[in-house]
Amino acid sequence: MKRIVIDARILVTGIGTYTFNLIASLQGKADGFTIRALTWAKDAERMHPLCDEVRVVDARIYTIREQFEIPWAARGADLLHVPHYNAPLLYRGKLLVTIHDLIHIMDATFRRTVASCVYARPMFNLVARKADHIVTVSEFTRNQIVELLGIAPAKITVIHLGVSPHFCPQDHQEAVARVSAALGLNRPYLLFIGNLMPHKNLKTLIRAFALLRARKALEQELLIVGDSRRWKNRFLSEPHKQGVAGVVRFVPHVSYEMLPWVYGAADLFVLPSRIEGFGLPILEAMACGTPVVCSRAASLPEVAGEAAEYFEPSSVEDLAAAIERVLNSTERQAELRHKGLARVKQFSWDECARRHGEVYRSLL
Image (cartoon, rainbow, N blue to C red):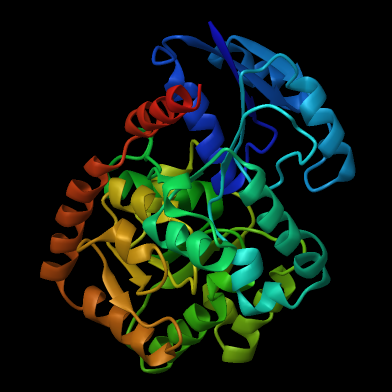
């Protein structure tokens, strides 16, 4: 029986969603191998039912300490799978790395930072070459890895993410009532969910929203769900600058149980990102029956297909026009709901796990 070790210390953000659902979905599909998860002490109890073995590794992400502790905790493994580019360079066994995106070296805001120059860029190059194989989540990111890191295409496998059955259509009126009770939001709203980082392009969204409010073209508020210790202040001040502070709500966190209701109560979900490795909230919104407007950038058309209204991410006017087109047409809203619910059927965590199993076996 072969032993696969998965670094499961990141269980938040998109990487965490991927890692948790991959391990959970591998149950019953791990024919010929066992799974050992490496996780922080606070998450050990959560991970125990999902895999054969759990080892606690409390080393923080992006530290020298993890470079030593992960190889030690993975001793005896036939394959180590690290779901991020922070893989241990000292590890001597077979190594599979998942690279979700190259945002830290591609986005203009990040690539000028000390962290990008000193850590991200060297690590991407070193890890991509050290890994026996690379999994990525979109053809867009695969092409970027080939072009920017000089990795042979044959060394990279694209495996799309899935969407959990937890995200499904909700009764709209019940969703509105639940969101009102939980968040105190009593008007219709447009929705953004994601971390508050520069590449999410939130200033463009807030400015497009302010433009539509100034034209009296919409009555909805804007709900922004997400947080970032480093970057959020640059976005918190933007509604004041645009004169819409009273109708833009920032909510740092919504529970997993509450998320489908937050999606389901929204009139529209908007993802204005300049770059994304995948764009999982698009699928979650579609699965809840919410019409989606997203930028025509990076991996987003690959994920959304024909089930979204698109706009150019650099244009406030184009985003405002896209929102207005959907809100002013009940037919377009119904079309996007129908196409979105059909689109998400192409993405499942079971299929994601099955494809990973194929990669594991090919490496073993």
